[in-house]
Image: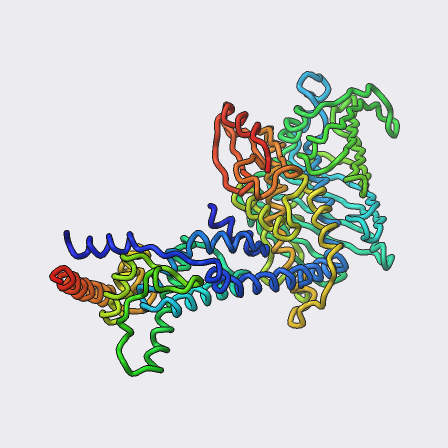
Length: 436
Length: 179
């Protein structure tokens, strides 16, 4: 035998046994350190960061913007059906529209989480969308704490893959980078009315028959199908009123509740079709003395499986379990409720509020990725099912989330956050397995 | 994936996860430390320090390769430091006494089998660098270039240490067989 093989054999055959006393000596101190870390963490900076975030006026604006974006994102899912002659006509008419301008009013009431202040906020926006240049939204709202009026402009610039939010009162602006996937999704949702109609086809709706709005004869369609918002909201009720003569939308009425704690009502109205637009309208106007917040810009959440798994990890890290629901609003409420209960400590002295907010928003990005992935899967009719209420990280082989990836093929994320593709038969077996 | 999950649970403060990592890898870590130091007590200290260090750094720790490889590298680094410290305090050669067998050990200590006793005794007769090259290559399954990169030396140096070490071990083996 060669000496190398002989030595290798000796090494492979080497064995060692330890008594429980040795194990205790070796591991005891490490376990004590772990315990201390756990205690520091539970009373640590994260809850304070969260509290600061929720108090921050910047965040309030951002939160309001998120809601508006969610509603805008929901716009494509207004109810319609190929079987309906009227809605097919709407689709055809919208197919000829290059640029749309409309107004939106929203009223948000309730609390993000138990123990948090009740909110009652009104927002009014004017939105212009052009297939070629992007989107611009001008939003006015009132700070419920101070009563002060605030304005905000939001631009979506597809060519630069950027979303820019300008906050004149704070003299700040935020640049958010899109991933290609998200940009494609936004284009699909907001910039292509034909796609909007196609998305609506899948929702269950009721024909309300004819009515009259401002002297215009309209036909109404109502849906309470949560799928219209891609699973981002809880209970929903949306009514679309269409001009019976032109077959173009006249009014959208929305009423949404989230976990019975928060309610959003709103209308979309004053539609103007094929408005003349100039590219310069869609170019962000940022005065020289405005500060970038955060300085290095932000990235929009990705909608990939990897980012979603990272989000699940972070959520479990913060909350001790996986999210109970996969929809964005419930998820954000759940994490807010958990964080708000924690005992606050002093903010790290070397961080400004701005840095703190930016850092936390960055941390939360993968959690939003998870909700965005779920939303996309709902929208794409990939039959996602999420078992966060019953599956924990100890359920290693249990199905945490799954969706259809091809005919008789499903992508599965397991309790241990591994992922693989299985057949329909394998999935049925997996879903029968008892949980720990 | 299991290791990633264990690390993740450790980050969340799971004692069970840390204990599982210890149970899973303690044998490999102790064998490496004993073979490098030929001293069970020092080996125990090294593995102890590795786990304490692991927990201290857990918040920022990101598992990019294998957890076993990471822990073995930590053991090798700390064993090297322990060896240097030992030489600073003692001018004599490495202790050549082989690690003891189960029969002559107190109940609370580490028990090595015959192969490990022979291995550590033989290794103790090599210069430390040669032991390290052999153990990291065979026991930690590290490529020469990885060892070289970690120690900041050339691949040829690692290979030379490995070859000289093997030659020396062969002569030790031969002399043992003649007895």
